[in-house]
Length: 226
Length: 401
Image 1 (cartoon, rainbow over the protein chains, first blue to last red):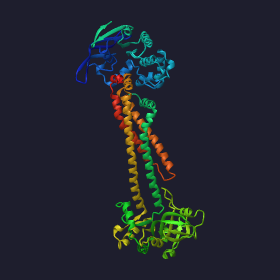
Image 2 (cartoon, one colour):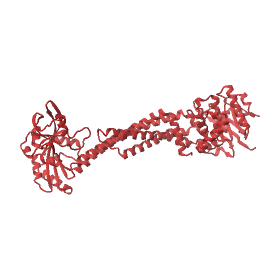
Image 3 (cartoon, rainbow over the protein chains, first blue to last red):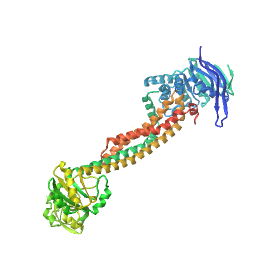
Image 4 (tube, rainbow over the protein chains, first blue to last red):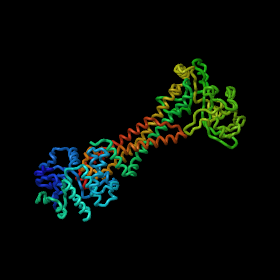
């Protein structure tokens, strides 16, 4: 199987306010293939969040190349990157990031608005993915009427709706109790079994061990990949 | 870019999530627009009212007024010069002797005085008019008779009451033959006038008393008169009559002592002044529109800050910077245009409500202008917050607490 996303010699440098340069990533080479379930683990400051932003093409590397499905990221404008994110990446965040006072169904539809899908089809597809995450009967509820675990499942449905090449989960269980967290991990594993590619960032080894491949980060470098 | 209808829907959804705040933000625009509509409608109404009043005078009547009047002069100097009018009955005689195309020549002298009867009293306009004036203005008696030239020559203390004044002093009683006190003198009521003219602006034109000109001069202790009305044979001879009158009066008076105006000229001058007044009123109201715009910008800036995470999320799931820009810009425009629409409705309703007291005319240009200005206000004051939103870095925005 060909690689979904390929990072080679990726370096990311931040300039702090004082003019000091911080190297968050120091030459990352990484290939992720379709159907993988990858966990990126490492202590805070190890560069795992920066790596996730690069994989999610929210950010461009300072040097090195990132190729997502034949697209060389460095060459693309912000408008093009947005379209690419919309099509290929599904995000799941630690803090869920659902729009308040907006129903679960409308939250799930959101990415399709930006890909120009007509209203009727949006609704149909939102119902399909809500069904996959087991919340079809909660479509009319707003986030404040849902538990944390349910909110995260709505967020996963939102990530699924564009049928992305890659689901990127940033500490998906970080704001949940252990039982709800376990359910979310099971859901992700289930989705992976159905063929979805999942990249999950976490600092908990226990959760990382649920993945098929574990990448350990330290000081901006990959220290182990197995 | 996603279709504008989708963006419009997104914007309206966002505004509906904060209904009370959206409404309060619109309030500035609502007040501004309704003030523009209302004030301009009052100004326009005033203009229409006054034009109508003067048109009833007839297109072929030329007025001689004391002092300088017209494009160069102002109402203030005219009011002052009325006090020192140099026009006299002698001038009236001379003008009437000019012959055709000069027709009727009428003189008037107006002031205010207390008119009382049996303990009831009213402070009203008193008009001393020559009998030619009565004819020219078509003033006729509903009951009793009008005074005659003979009464005028003899300066008799007789008076015809305006209909409203008669009702106020006498109720349902017939005033003819009764004696009233005007100022300090006794007058015999010989008639009640037919109702005339349109009422408006809190002034009842029928609340007045008419008396022979010389009687009024005696009452007010003056030898001068206030204005002379000269009727031309027809509309086309008006310029000739103006020249003849100017020439005749010029023999005795300086050019600055009097003005000769026809009603078209008069209406034009008054409309100039009222037009300026309307613009000034509209301008003051427009400033409140500007303040409303600043209110919108303020709320939109707050909204962008408050919704930083939402913006970050939208960008993460595929919103382009331009999508975000248009969403926030359209939110601002919806606020200002919504306010504009409500303002137009409220302003028009206000004008309608006031039309029972004073004449108001809602003009299409004030409605159009208010709409245009509120749309412009929305765009101008919406651009800065929208640009800020579109430039947010999604990573920073998602981390924002």
